Image 1 (tube, helix red, strand yellow):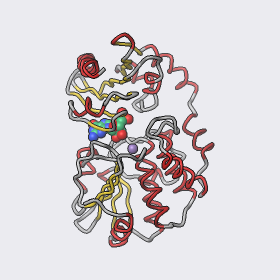
Image 2 (cartoon, protein in one colour):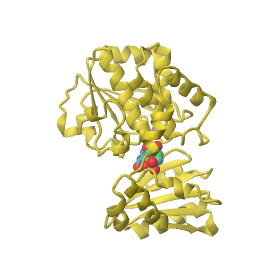
Image 3 (cartoon, helix red, strand yellow):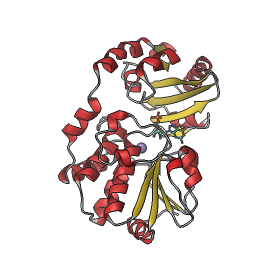
Image 4 (cartoon, helix red, strand yellow):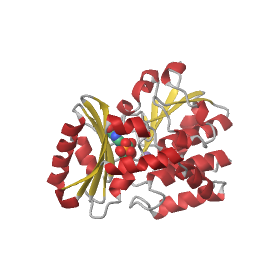
Length: 314
Ligand code: 5GP
Ligand code: MN
């Protein structure tokens, strides 16, 4: 059931124990949204617990409260708990945290591929980020803002719209960002933290760029995270797809990441081609211009399959 802002406020106050979670491979939107809701629920006197079934990229360490995020095996729940699933399309996207879902579920999400799985939902596919949804709700509820909440939500919004450069940036996105800055978010400090790289990481960039390839007369760009490259750059690869996306003439950019001999993780970005449809054809999903999926194939085979699917849509 799609709820109003007021209904969600009432619902959250009805519960005492609340589990707050988001998708595996958490990005800035997932983490910022989880932290912001958790900070506010704690301030409202709730027993709120954050759970994410994955490692967290240490470039988000500056966010207040990050160390309180638990792994699923550290938490016990029962049917009296409400689970709030943020920035995820279905329970299949939250990993083992799904085992903790014993009671009802509220889903706040902006992915076009949402499975509409929850008892209650607030679904805004025209919003750039789940952080934009939460900022809107908090603004409607006239909450008492804190710098921690404002910074978390600014990080959520800014990272999901490429710092206001992607076409999902709307007037509403900018208005919500303004609400956050007016209430204590620090865009310069957040950007400094997210842009900072160790010298080793910066030097490793040359190895990443070496892996870039073009297909279809330069209309498709691809970046491969081979096991050798992952040994140098580490597992948190979220930032690198932007280099493939920025190649002149590339209409679709994608990355293939080695997970195992027959498992490859794929991320897709586009300037217009519906990559959600491509990801969906392999069991994944996301947005029209940013999506992902996992293939039970070796890296090179997965790469060839994805190129073929993209070529059909160019
Ligand atoms: P990324 O390429 O950064 O992993 O994901 C791009 C977008 O697609 C994100 O909004 C992410 O939540 C979504 N996404 C990535 N992988 C999947 C997937 O396997 N299933 C679904 N439903 N969404 C995905
Ligand atoms: Mn998001």
